[in-house]
Length: 323
Image (cartoon, rainbow, N blue to C red; front, side, top):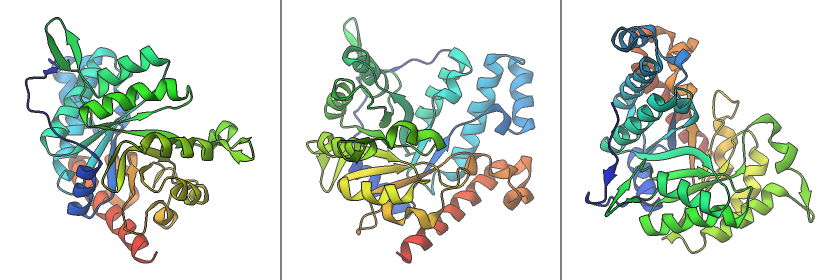
């Protein structure tokens, strides 16, 4: 079943960095749950039900990950401000997977969550314009306009420079939405390019300075709607980048399963206790597979995810209290 995009007759929802901040303060959880559902994470009973209806097909896989996502969101939405669906985990199942992505985005917004689309787009100007329209803005179809995916923030790759980023910023201004631009990623080989010294500075610092520049005229109070992605696995670099980007929120991947620890995260936050939001993906959505949450079992996988969120919140709060 294809999902219809929302047309612009709907009441515009205002989602800016100040709303993200309000939700972080309400939940006391600077946490984003990464909805990155590999089929191997989905409990057998969920897959069996989906396959019974749709067969072992792309449609069956998409139904399984959608039901998996829905159960987890139902279990944790009151504890967190935001979710971050990674689009590749849906694209691998083709068009049915993209439909599951869209269903997930819409459902999370219905539950009051901010949605950060982890799409890592960035290309030449006209292509970036199309990506920006598809994920953050509206597209014209004859006499009408529609919001296709309608995330609140997306991740953007700045490798092509301002030509590739400015179209996203333009749509963000028009739609009151935001970006998280890749600055220093959490993967082991990120330094092959990002750490190279250019004009006496590592490249990631130059990108951080550019993010601060891009965000300067997209502010909403103390913080900009243009943020940065800085991995938890490089805390010393995070400390430097925090100083370079004092008004830019930092999305921090790499906590938990990738080795990032709460104690490593304190320098990503400003003195006001804000300025960063920490992502955990499989550490939460596949928590039931971990020894620490094994008591929940497959049947109660969503309860395991809820407990993992509570534990992560306490871990980060404890680290920040000792900052």
